Image (tube, rainbow, N blue to C red):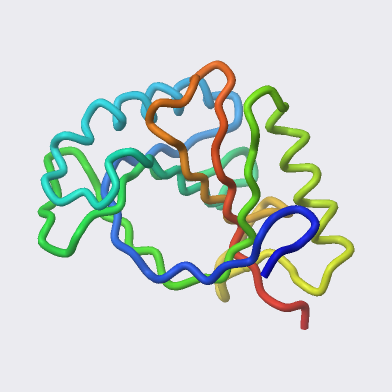
Amino acid sequence: MKTLIGEIVTIPSYRAMGLKWEGPYGDVPKLKEVILRMGKRVNELRFVKNPETQLGLSYHLRPDGFVHYSVFEVDDQQEIPPGMIEVNVPEMTDLIVKHPKGKDIGVTYTEIYQWFKGCDYQPLRENGVEYFDDLPIKHERYPVDRDLEDPHFEILIPLVLKS
């Protein structure tokens, strides 16, 4: 379903593997190193489904920061390489927004937050999980050939109808 800001799509469940980072907002430069390292390790995943798309799965589970998984989607037969972790993402309905090259990422996320204020949806908050952000789960899809200084990518925000 098209919206003014993006598209609402149900994404089937999937399995992914990669590297985990957790820390405060002040340590985000270290996260960028993890993302780059995972991009170089994709060749260790023999059963990667789309080696051209790196995923960033962020969960705001800390008051001072977040947990981030830099991963690639893999088939069921993929074994976990040394030093990597497995993430199983359940089927979710997501708002997908394209973040263009040349635009400030903060502006894009502010537009997403504003859209939620005026629509029939709210960001998904899993039962029994404490989150510390108005957009508690942020998934991003990056083309591996992106410009790291001025990237373009897709933002996926899991959502549900307001109750």
